[in-house]
Image (cartoon, rainbow, N blue to C red; front, side, top):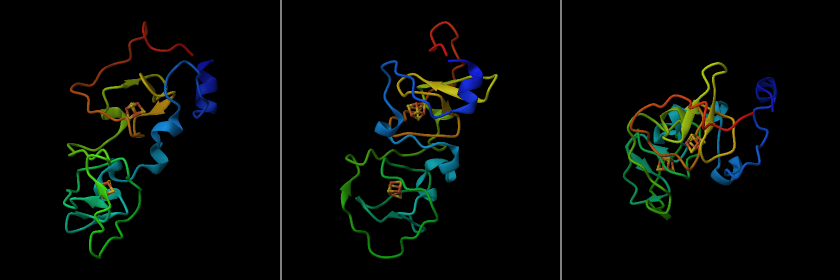
Length: 148
Ligand code: SF4
Ligand code: SF4
C-alpha cells in the first residue's frame, strides 16, 4: 500500500495478524471527547459518580471500556451494573489517546500513526480498548514498523 492510499482511506484494514479495529472498539479523533476520559462520557455525573460502574466513585480523568462520548447526562442514583474490573476501569493520568499509548508509533510525515497490535493506520488523537499507558513517547522505528 502506498502512503497516499493511507491518506485517502484511513480505515482500510491491513491483514497482517494484528487485531481489527472493531474488535477493540477503536474510535478516531472525530469521536474524541475530553480525551476519552470520564469527563467526556455520558455516564458521568459532575459529582464524580458513574451511572453504571460498581462501585460508582470515579474521577474526571479516569476512564473505562464502556466509555460513550458526549455531554455527561447522569443525575440520578447510580445503577451499579458492571464491576470496575470487568469494565477495564483505569485511573487516568492525562487522558486515553493513541499518542499516550505504549503500542503507538507516530508517522511524522503524515500525522498518522501505526499500532503494534491493532490494524492501522490509527490517529494520535484516537483510542481503543487495548490502550496501555506508555512510560515514554517512542518514535517510529522504520526497520520494524509494518510496511505500506
Ligand atoms: S467509568 Fe466508564 S462508563 Fe463510567 S463515566 Fe467513566 S468512562 Fe463512562
Ligand atoms: S495505539 Fe493503543 S489506543 Fe491506539 S489503537 Fe493501538 S492499542 Fe489502541
